Image 1 (tube, one colour):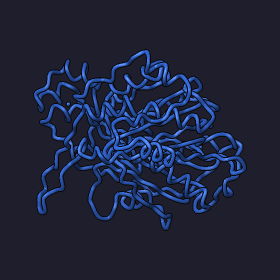
Image 2: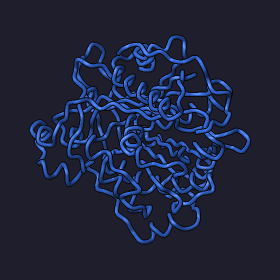
Image 3: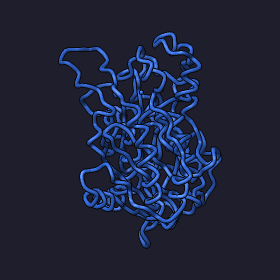
Image 4: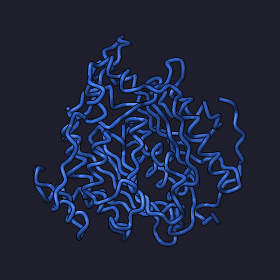
Amino acid sequence: MKDVAWSTTRPSRLSSVDHDPAGDPPSVSAAQRQRTNGPRTNWDTTDMTTQQTDVDVVEATARTGGASGLGGYGVLGVGMCLPDTIVSNAEIAADCGADVDWIERRIGVVERRRLPSSDTVADMAATAGAQALDDASVRSGRSFQPGLLIVAVTGGDRVVPAPAFDVHAALHFGLTPALSVDGACAGFAQGMITGLSYSRAGFADTTLVIGANRAAFYADRHDKRIAPLFGDGAGAFLLGPVPTGHGILAWQMFTHSELTSSLYTDRTIQGSTAVEPLQMRGQEVANLFATRLPAFIEQTLADAGLHIADVDRLFVHQGNVRMVEGLASILGLSPEQVPISGRHVGNTASASLPIGVGMSADELTSGDIVVLVTAGAGLNGAVVVMRWT
C-alpha cells in the first residue's frame, strides 16, 4: 500500500465542528413484540443463578456517552474493503456437501468474499482505514491524522505482534499509538466504545477503528454448519468530534461467559500449521439474539432517552441472515430499517458492522437514529446508539 501523507492538524479536544446456523431463526410472538415496544423492561434472568446478581450486572454494564457539556463524538468517515474473489453457494456446497437451496433457505447467504492467500489481512484492513480517512476528508474538506488506532481482527496474519501493529505499519502511521481489541464479532463495537473513552480521557481527539476478518484461519470448508456462513472483508470508522447532541448517545457491553463453549476454537497444537476449526452450537447463539439482544437494545435506547419507534436504522452483526431477520421482527422494525448486508458478504465477524454501515451509508441522513448491535464468541456483545452526523 502506498504512503499516505496525513495532516498534523488535529481538531481541538471535544469541540464541535461544523459538519446447528444451523440454529433455527428466532420465533416471534405477539407478547415479545408488545414487550419490546412497551415500557422499559429488565433483562430476563430466569435461567441465571440468581435474579438479583444479573440485574446488578445489567445495571453495571450500562454506560452513557455524549453527556451535556462534553460535545459529541461520532463517525466522521466510513470505509470498507471487500476482496475481489466472490464465492458462490455452489462452490461452498461442492466442498461441504450441503444442498445449495438449503444454504440460502436456512442461512440466507447467497455469496461471500475470499481474500487470496497471497494477500494479508493487514493490507485489507489498512485499505478500509485509508478509505475512512478519505471519506472524512471529503465530507469535511480537511485532512485528519488519527490520535489513536484501534484494530479488531478475527483471523490475523500472525499471533505476535498483535494485528494492530501490522495494520499500523501498512498505514505508515509513524508514532501514532495503536492497540488491538480481541472481542471476536463484538470487537468493532468494543473498539468504538474504547475510542470514545480515550477521547473523554483527553488522550485522542480522533480514533480510527478498523475491523477485519479472514475466515480461512478458523472456518472448516468441509463443515456444512460453518463453511456457508463466513466471508472475508474489512471496515472502518474514523471517530471524532461532532456537534453536541450527535454521535454516540449511549452504549452497553455485556459478557455471558457461561456460554464460552457455544462458539470457540481449541488451542492450536504446538508446531501444527493446520486450521483449528470453529466449533459452534448454533441454537444457543440464536437464542441469545432472540432473548437477550431485544432487551439490551431497548435499555440502551432508554439511556439515550429514546424508544424503538425512534430508530431509523438498526445495523446488526450478520452472524446469520435469518437470525437478523428474526430480531428485526421481534423488535417490530421493517426490512428497510434493518439492512441485510450478510446476504452478499456473509458473516465477516469483527468487520460486519462497519461493512453493513458502509454498504448503506448513502441512505443515512444527518439526525438519523442509528443503532449498532452485535454479539459473538464469548459470548459477548455490545449496543451503540448514535445520532448520525
